[in-house]
Length: 389
Image (cartoon, rainbow, N blue to C red; front, side, top):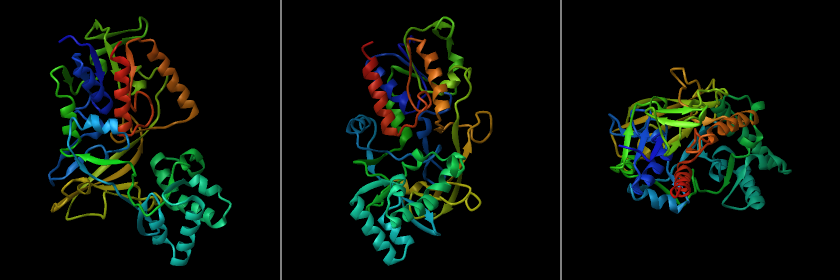
């Protein structure tokens, strides 16, 4: 088969744009280094009859109707509203920290006063970043902000990012909200649902076109060659003039010539248990690492449409420094942003710009964090931009 488009990576970014080109009767080759499609969304039914997410929990939520309408062509849905509890003062309270959380950790009189102060100052059904609370001149609100910072944010972030409190960027702190509400859902998006037959089935449907060929367990460099002197791309040693959509790590694409870009990684320890393990899908542990080394535990049957199972499967989540050559922590999950790293990434982008038929798409290629709905939207938008070229 002669190809019009080559896509590197079979996660949401690569699969959605491959689907669109294939629907336009373009011949598409997907190169995927893993043994399965779906990227980090890959899931399967395990020995306990639980749908297990191999690379960590993925919860679909969005207010983008265009994304929902598109994906609904490839899956049916069931409603699922994610809830998270956090271990705070030896109690499990709703996360994000909300009015119910205040009632759980403070005595009645203090809780009622704090709730009234927050509602009076910020209004109901609002999300207020801790950074804003910490700047409030009211001493009781400021005290609450410090309590939340210490007990909900600080140690979780230290474990997640491998940082000391002094190294934590205030901008990161600022994104942690207090939800002035009794709504204990983790998300408030209009659409909160899960694919009825799992994410893997959704991807199988996305990629079912006869115009798509998939090479699994194949390294990009085994098929594609990027000649940085001639600025040409070769597919199986023949010059390729079609479009190349690259969704992998951009530093890997250019053999780390400018140095490696840093990430944080994760490792998951799965366990099977009888019955039910915890009250909700995810429990966070924003505790010091000497108390709990892990950040959270997910019980996957809570995420299923039918969770009435005799057995259950949990995944205990441990953050790791990313090292592509290590046995643990060798998957890049979260880009680490600093001004210096941003400049290095921009230099890699300049290298990619030399190839007129190369397009970067996705979390690793663009070195930014995407929610699922955002990357689907980005892939659809890139297709619209490229389809007439």
